[in-house]
Amino acid sequence: MSAQPSSDSMYVAQEKIYPREIKGRYQTVRKFMVFLLLGLFYVTPWLRIEGNPAILFDLPARQFHILWLTFWPQDFVYLTLLLIVSAVALFYVTAIAGRVWCGYACPQTVWTEVFLWMEHWTEGKRAKRMKLDKGPWNAEKILRKTAKHALWLTFALWTGFTFVGFFVPIDDLLSRAMTFDLGPWETFWSLFYGFATYGNAGFLREQICLYMCPYARFQGAMFDRETLVISYDEARGEPRGGRKRGIDPKTRGLGDCIDCNLCVQVCPTGIDIREGLQYECIACSACIDACDQVMDKMDYPRGLVRYTTENALQGKPSRIIRPRTILYTVLLLALLAAGTTGLMLREPVRLDILTDRNTLYRETVEGLIENSFTFRLTNMSRDTQTFVFAADGPEGVMLETDPAQVTLTAGETRTLAARIQLDPIYARGRGGDDVTVTAQSIGEDTITGSETTRFRTPLGR
Amino acid sequence: MTSLPRADTTAQETRYPPSRSWLIGICLWPAFLAAGVASLLFFSGIDPETLRLQTMPHWEISRTAGYSIGFLMFWAVAALSSALSILLARPPQK
Picture 1 (cartoon, rainbow over the protein chains, first blue to last red):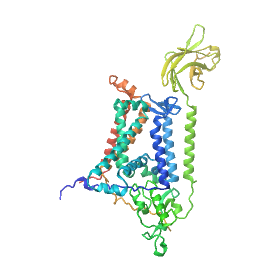
Picture 2 (cartoon, chains in turn purple, blue; picture 1 turned 45 degrees about the vertical axis):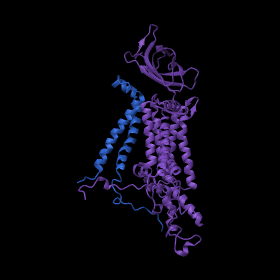
Picture 3 (cartoon, rainbow over the protein chains, first blue to last red; picture 1 turned 30 degrees about the vertical axis):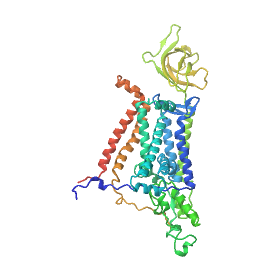
Picture 4 (cartoon, rainbow over the protein chains, first blue to last red; picture 1 turned 45 degrees about the horizontal axis):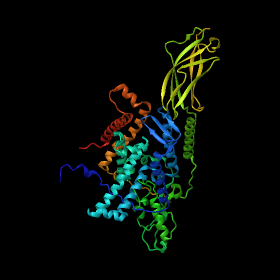
């Protein structure tokens, strides 16, 4: 015996889980979600609107293009709002329907599902996979394993490439990838995301959910007795035990569970749902589909394992409308309303007016009061625009910019000198008046932005 | 009365740490998330191009490189913090 045991001895050997494939109502929904979500992921970077990518997070240009909208760093508040809305939506869904996010929509689950399909195509069904892993490294095993990893790696690399395609126009990226002309960081992030997918969906799988997912740990706080959970009906199923078809279980003193263990074999996290609600359960409903199949074969009613609530299991009514869900609804609607209003009112032009700090005002030879300003104009629309300026305020206010017109490409910012003049007889305020300057794109009525500044006049008139 | 059965997993039954890769995971993964948030906040306010011009104008790097280096730096710092937390959370060994 060695004096110092290797630190590995305190680690539990991770047992590999071989989820058995299953068909059923819920698995059909999950398959549909895989196609929908991954379809969105892989297709979106290729979509175009009027020649521009429909969605492009153009980091080098510091612009995010989302459909018809363009976002700038100063629109950061919308991103924050979007993240808050997503979080509240997740709490909302969790309070009502439990961990449906985990089972149907989480990227970890969705990609793992696809990797499992590929494993199934190359290595066969559960029993075959287990035999293959136990068996010697013969030609078949090498061939099957190579095929699996080749498929996985190809898919993972394409995933990494698509990920970078959200940040760099993907057709350009593809043509450069073909000639091995990718930038160092494009290559790095493609490989990074690709290998993360390969590792997470191919190897780590349920361990991400068990050990690394923060949501799995705090979702319990959003659960109550009326939250939808997947549960085994213990009262109906127990005592479990094997029996022949067509025998009334009551005559043998048995419940409806025939103890076929199918619900355990299909579980991607390797738990037994009959032991109760467990944090490992990602609510994928594979056990429901498996059990329903068996119940059908036995001519028992379905739903020995089913979506239910803690209250329902105890014969109490379950409500969807309850204080918690009302609160989430109100919160979600308020946030969405705030975000939409903000977006609608967002100006496609940003005008900053900087006042000249050296002289408050100047009197011209004609006896007019003049203030000097610096205008800083940013074109936040998607196209090149030519802007002219106008001032609004006390009667007879005049504005002159140098140059008189300014043409800005999408995203361009320029500063220009400006003077505002006012006949002192029209000065209304004491020491100054508010003047609103508007930058207006020629020929584009909607592309306009305005800013109010203080026009300073002499005191004590 | 039937009640929803609950799994009896107690702290004593859970081995710590479950595996070495788990330790690496819980060090790098939360740091990755934190680095993402930090990069988002930092770079929404500060353009790496401006930062470069003001600090190292002779170092010619693209914005993409600036973002990437920034993210990796945040990740490294956050991972260091995670690693220290893991170290301190461990029961002292004799």
